[in-house]
Length: 328
Image (cartoon, rainbow, N blue to C red; front, side, top):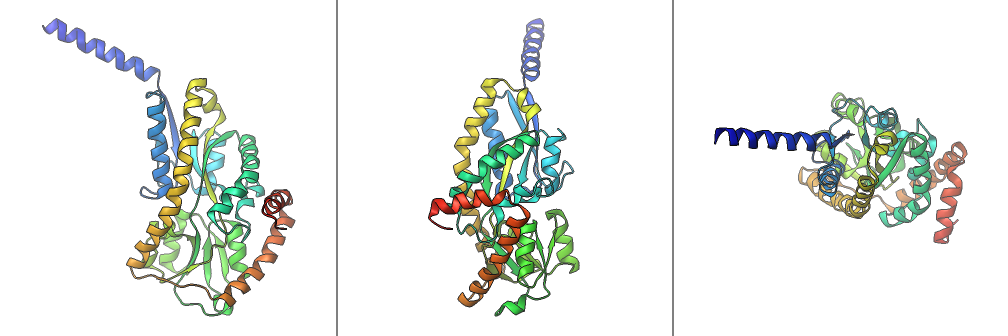
């Protein structure tokens, strides 16, 4: 019996060792914290990939920037193989290529439905850019609607003047600066200390980020501006991708295609839930007056023109999208 038990144990160990030898482990860098819907998406994706590949491909999601990368570092980290995969805020990669800012042209897109239409023209260009940086886009998910968070109530466009507001990318900084605010680009990891110290007194971002940062501890008013749109893309290093079998690659692509629409819906739902959480903590949603909206839209025209002058490659993409809508 003892010999039989030893033999069974050895056989089990051999099977487990064989399985481990045939297993591919991939690291996925995620700068967002646990609980953020984008981070939860990456973990759901990892679980689905493991199941679809019968445990042959295991993706380990490292949240809260625990691999040591900040948002703007993500594209380069995957390019250089420092991480096999990453959940990348696309607009934060404009330092690598300014065309990555084409999604967030201020007030070009008014809703998530329109963003999906814009992606029909924009995503192929992003996929080409990703390949230039030694990676492949597996799926893309938009951030929810955008807001400006402040400590005071705004009645007139002049009330914005001099308020230091953090934006995640250049487009956001440009639009808030055009309204008279002092826009400053800042990675998420630096934001909360800046709010606590008073270095910044406002933030332009989504409702989900407002919950992540517990903005009610620093700010009081939420202004629905929907000034820009942006997405995250989960990418994989092409060298890591090439080590997978064709069957594994096909399984991963299928999982990504099936989950992406669900992830879009989770973005929409997270927006409303996050607003409810923030108002539950005493924050106030303040609708902009029609006059103020018109003033902001007028300022946005110049910011749009400046963007296309700076990034001419984005103009044909935006024009094609507008033409498909019958716009100009």
